[in-house]
Length: 70
Image 1 (cartoon, rainbow, N blue to C red):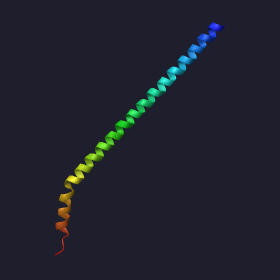
Image 2 (cartoon, rainbow, N blue to C red):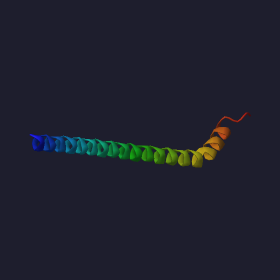
Image 3 (spheres, rainbow, N blue to C red):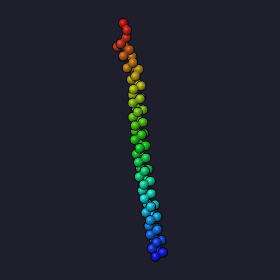
Image 4 (cartoon, helix red, strand yellow):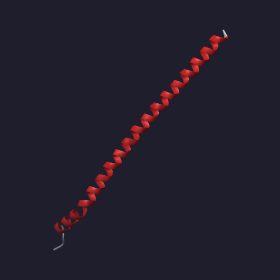
């Protein structure tokens, strides 16, 4: 009976360990995906800023010439 309880306890502890490992691994993958998405959005935002600031001065000059007072 004692041997059975020891084996049962070992299986329970092993199962809990595997479950915790699996949950931690899943959480790590989710964090990794979120980090990649944030990096991608940050890259897109920076590209938009560069594009907008590059043509901003040309746009301002064009509008200034278009709506200049006579």
